[in-house]
Image 1 (cartoon, rainbow, N blue to C red):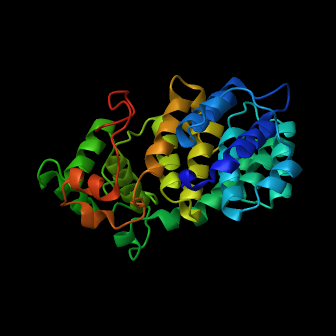
Image 2 (tube, helix red, strand yellow; image 1 turned 180 degrees about the vertical axis):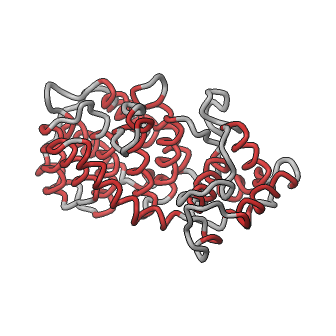
Length: 319
């Protein structure tokens, strides 16, 4: 996805992003680290790493006229915006100024405005409404005809348990190993409205080789968006940033994960995984994963052009 940004637009986009977070005394250390990682890994412009001359909303709008490029500016800006802790009214105002000039909009604008103006409760209510619509679009395709239930699903549980009998090295066997490493219950064994989403999401983790750490969850959603920045994948990034970076998803565990990208190596991981995602030949996050279960994982990765991570032993990968 990001590779298709015209080379001539990289500098004004980066300068615009810097201008958008140059509030309240300047970008935070976390915002700087994330922007620098994206500049290095997405656009390979080391000369733009560090402070650049900011470009205001009107100037960015005059240069970045392509709707796709504007959308990608917005996607990166969303990531940078939630990396300011605490989120301030000045930061939200500045982002909205760029949004007005570039004619972009999205549920994030309302969520973050409500977070700044009305607090966590209002933002969490926005997120709940957004998630209710977006989550169904990310259910496993083979399960979409089954009703979502908060009760255990014996048929699904049996399907998932049978994956342990598949040969080692297959996608399905790797998925059961993933659940074992993470200490997670197989979908269907316990009741959850998320079970049909878990199957698709967790298999995407396995194929990408990204583990379910806090930084890994954000990196995976960025990887997905880099494969194809469709509405579903953009929604996945927003959801991940809300839960693991902004921390207002409405539970104690998610609140404790606020500021994830400030952790050691997290910003670098984000940039690396967006680079890996953009190099894939097709988006595997929304395909029929259950049909892939019997196939060799290495073969599936080759089919979709999934390259090995830069550091498979960094604690955020299993390769």
